[in-house]
Image 1 (cartoon, chains in turn cyan, red):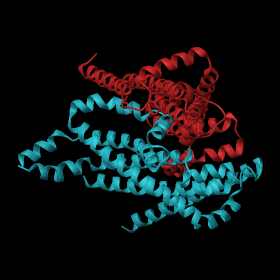
Image 2 (image 1 turned 30 degrees about the horizontal axis):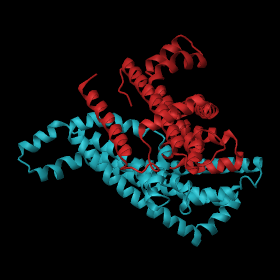
Image 3 (image 1 turned 135 degrees about the vertical axis):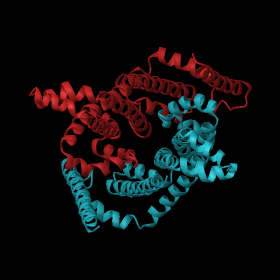
Image 4 (image 1 turned 60 degrees about the vertical axis):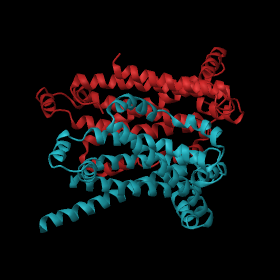
Length: 256
Length: 252
């Protein structure tokens, strides 16, 4: 017991040191790059950090972050709702799944940014347009992984449910849900990432609010400090959210 | 063609026909969407006119360059990391989160550094694609059978010979998956970069046509890009499956 604990602590310190070394290496490269191209083109790490400390608690940042949060929230809700609905339908109805899967896969790998003007023509420069664009990114991975999860349920699970005379409701709660959940959560995790990217792309093009807009705007003003500050916040947000969803996924895998 | 394939074809054709009908009858405003047949004819005349030849060359050139750099350097980096288990252990969490964070938001930083040349576009393409290649290389090298490296040692093969003659072919199906992802990722990010901010390229052309309310041109360009992406992706996918089958592994 003591031994495993000690080795866990060793592993932990090792991981922390590794992360610190990687961060230090990134900062060094950044510093070198800043000196190479000049501080007007790229601010170095320490002035950026000084700016970050002032900028992130500021009202301007808060307003734009809130705008992105609202857009992202709606986009995620639609992506999860429609993605799950399509995934369940295509997973349960085999013919639809077989017919539809390659269509979804093809669509998944297309550069969806080319379709953004169509969405803008339909919705105008509005919240609805940005939400739709974010959502179409997220629907596909959620649908594809949910479909795969349902298809991969071993038939013996359903047979045992029938043998045990479980009601349809009990079958869903006790058998289908636990069997599919880890993979569905994996879909939700990927959906989260790509929906965020979709929302940010929408904000970068022809928008006046949000963190994506801040990044593009600060580029026009050559404010690399602000640009990198926003990027770092988004990075941390995405990485933490991903870690949480990944933890949920592992937790569910262990339970099954 | 299988029954499923026939149904799929019917579904796709019916969807396009429904769109065509809705546009022709006037249910859809022509300022929003033009009929698919008009998109196609507009594309044909645009291609014949030669107006977009230079942009086609530029965009596809940038995608090819970004993919090439990602594949070559991604393989090299993967090889190096695979040889250093301690470094790999440190970098693994980094690789695992890489595609969970929106790398694309660093594109404006690259523009700030390198100006409006093709380089920021190439770099964002490489930044998005290279990690997929590194991961695929590590994955492939992990699955090189131990007996092969032992054979190499028995035959006293050098490091270079072992890498080129033995590890490369043995890991090939996994490497090809990396190539496939690299092409797809580079394509998507290059088009997005051009669309958001770039002096030229097909992505830029679409954004310009949108800004000029030139719907015929915009939809022709969209059709062109989506057609190219579909053809390239399906060709790579078909190839990937063939390779995987030959080596007896499940395609990823």
